[in-house]
Amino acid sequence: MKADALYDAAKSCAEELPAAVLTHPFGLDWEVFKVEGKVFMLLTEATNEPIAIIKAIPEDGRALREHYADITPGYHMNKLHWITLHAGTTLQESLVRELITESYLLVVEKMAKAKRPVNPASFGRSPR
Figure 1 (cartoon, one colour):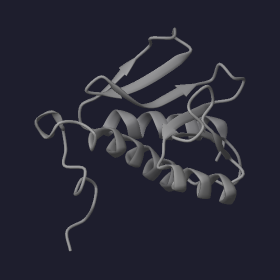
Figure 2: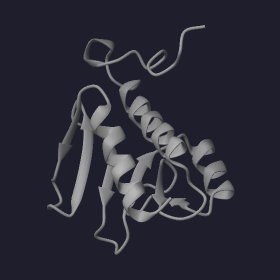
Figure 3: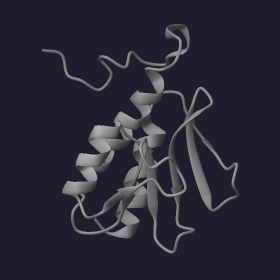
Figure 4: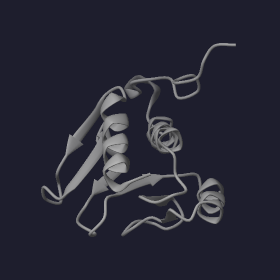
């Protein structure tokens, strides 16, 4: 996935998620996406390449880092709970979108049920 494609796919996916809000608490170089005030993705080109930093279940993050050369520990974040997506040859847009949605759902599932913009158990999953 080329640099522009990663940035565009990540931003587009985050903007499509219910109640997602774009903020710039660290300056215009950092796009921080939140749901109900909680961060689920940071997007920047300030590192000389576009990167997306997202939450992941620790075991999933470890497996993803081992399997994909373009996934590394979270840049300036807790390395156990965050991963960084880089442009390169190993990531496809569908995986980027899936990982961002999962990051969003990890944040939503920790919210009080009354504050959740979606049901994390069923959002984005097709009925059987």
